[in-house]
Length: 112
Length: 401
View (spheres, rainbow over the protein chains, first blue to last red):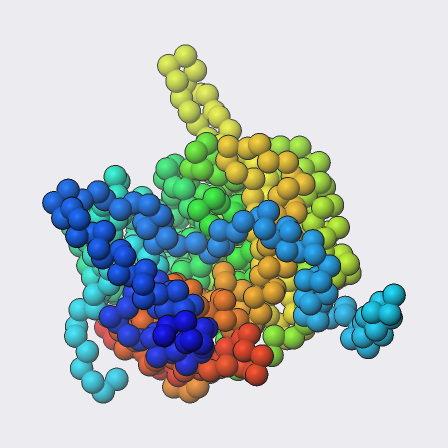
């Protein structure tokens, strides 16, 4: 049932944004559509040993530290932006792009 | 606000710690932050957070804070933002703020929140950051460099009608020292334009990137590092923007005293490294910034730094909207502090849908500001329009007391 739900819908985000029963991380997870079954698994794990609990420091604390520059995987970025298609898609965000000329050039390359 | 809100606003965890203190000061509400690193091996407030509290204390009058024994809880009752009027801790109108050597955060961690307070201050803000903890470069903890603050954050205030006598002087540069801690740089912030409320803005058009500026800095290493960073970055960016210019700043490493028994006058160098800050400006005045610096442990050639920075800039531009992630909080807070009028801002979906921004929206509504309206910018659905009704608080600190 959850699979059919559309993901990344703005109205969903707005609805959940001020819902204080969800943490911001949960809001984003639900918004992206990766939720429900994961939560159940996690709660079951916790029940197993309720006396000895290991402090969960795996990345949880780190995500609470403020970062102005997100952590990027630079190899993936390089791959993404070495791709000519991605660069061409981004080009319309630049003033240097002559849209007419670009259209013609693209039309030409299609025939090759 | 008509409805009586609880007098004490409660927050949890260390996220957006500095920003929350700033918001409390701007709205004049007492806050309590609990659960600050409760299960960490080094629990409670970190030294840079304490340092920020001291800075806040220096530019305000009558603030009171109480920190619990373990440091995991702090109650903060804001005073009024007096700025740097001579006579109160400010000698000659300048407050000296010294950062201790163990500080792992870049100076932008202190500068960006301080700049948010500055327009609402009574007297101009004039703070000299000094001491062995001032890191002017980008840091591994994700702070942007002071160059990016100067060229990508401060110009944003102009949109809000705040533009006079604002200057950020970089007197001495520094990169993170050994272990990413300490730096011994020196930076002076002058913020001389105080307003009652910032202007309401409507930024709906991101425009097109027309120019890219940047600063390549190297501290205590060969100047050829700069040339190598610039060369690679330009190679990537020039095909897209011909108007690309990267300045090169070479400085020697700062010396700090390290007296030993054998040599009481001994000094050592601290904060050697290099880095690159790139800022793209669009035709409508939107700024996108990227920052990469060499890691403190070294071992990364300048070519890689230049390449990473250029790709990071492309990624930031591709996120869309009128603001880059590093500037989003500044813009949204200034909008929320504006007059009681609807301001609109176009934000990329990926910039908006982050934990920090959702937290900021919640924090603001908890502190009595109105909720945000969010809708799709167009049918493509890549960008959002965030509409914010200003709280009309403005210079609330000046009115109370």
